[in-house]
Image (cartoon, rainbow, N blue to C red):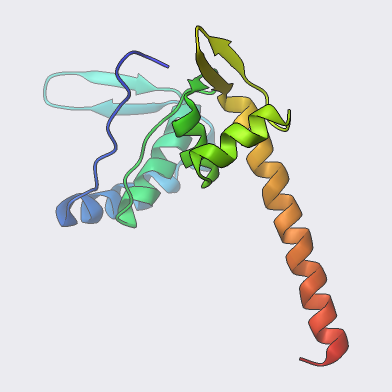
Length: 145
């Protein structure tokens, strides 16, 4: 990651309203897969279609009042950042690293977790949770609960 991580700011009520409107307008364009041309009084810029998809996702989160933070895919996370991403405690993350359940490497004495590895682990545990929930639901139906 870069030296200074971006701060995630909670959107104001005005920001939420603006985000809802901007998302509504931009979302209608997503099927075109063409670059987006933005104009202001001073200049005009062209945004890649892939970035427009991200912008709509950002606006969606902001329209719900959520703060947003972008992390590059190639990024390496600190153990605290990885723990936060996985919604687990840092000691639990350290245990998973020691058990070899999650990839990491050391930079000096500090552990770094590749973002891709953390996301793959998150998808895996989310899938396991969905399967367990489906089993419980099936069991409840068997019992007539």
